[in-house]
Length: 156
Image (cartoon, rainbow, N blue to C red; front, side, top):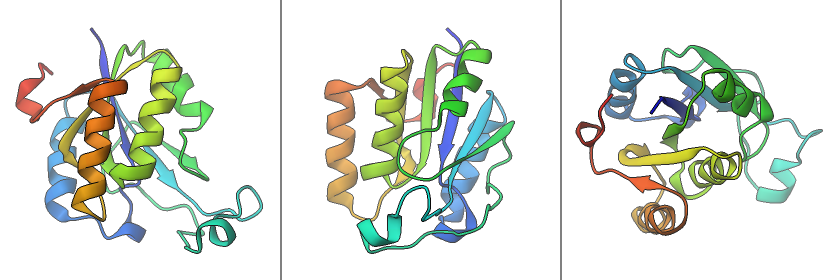
């Protein structure tokens, strides 16, 4: 079964822990990997108005060396990511990166609805709060796909 990985929002704006960058990078060296990075475009989605928060206004470079980089204006994966996965003939997709509670969960739903088997490894993701991270992992396991405790549990 062909696996790929999508790395969500691992970019300078979000102050990602270096240990997480290293762990994700080790996996990215072994399987086809693409980055999906957030860029705030108020014309596309009034993120600041709706969420009372802001994000990077300019395209940033991924902190993970990836085959491709895609930009997204909200939580869901853009169609270009789905197209790339189809081109790669992926069946299972590991999702790693930031904000388990929204962007990671939204990516999992996008992949599930596109016909892929999403995989999450909690140690390759982070969130602002432990509780939200844990709830998302439980939702994932019950409704979306596989949850693995460690990358060692997957044959890459």
